[in-house]
Image (cartoon, rainbow, N blue to C red; front, top):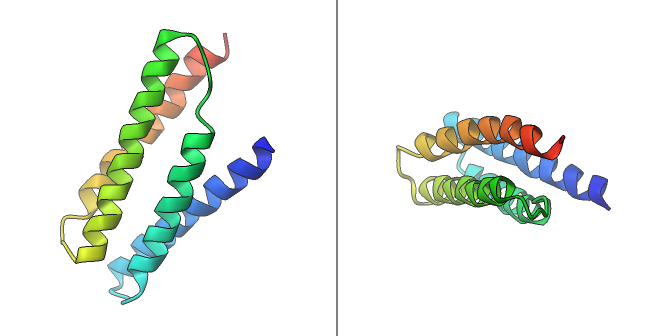
Length: 109
């Protein structure tokens, strides 16, 4: 079951990347691809949060929620046609990179 969730999470991220690339090339239907990808990634991100009694892991889980919120904000900005949509996606990507290393410090113990 966990592998199934990870595959759908990865598909969501690939859709986000594809939708953002389509937005760069000014394809009209890119917003649908981005919203579908963000929805998949957000739902399966929330389902994959590690359960733990460790306070630091719970804190990292809250930070994951902020990453999801930034992705939703970026999708909204693409949907309405704002030009600064790159910033929420950049913040979310950088935070995801940092969180992937931070989780490994606490979950591997």
